[in-house]
Picture (tube, rainbow, N blue to C red):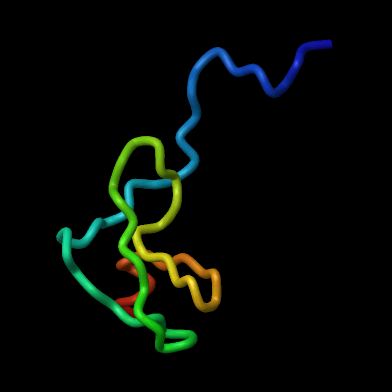
Length: 65
């Protein structure tokens, strides 16, 4: 039986989200608190926007709707 945690190649778990310009600001659509814009680095696999208040991530596409 092989160990499924050891992969031969790295796996990218996110799609390529549209990333806003550095310095952009947005308020959370759920709690209306300011959100944090995450750095767009290869090691980060989440969405660009993070709300500390409600612990939720958002993409630019979700915020346009």
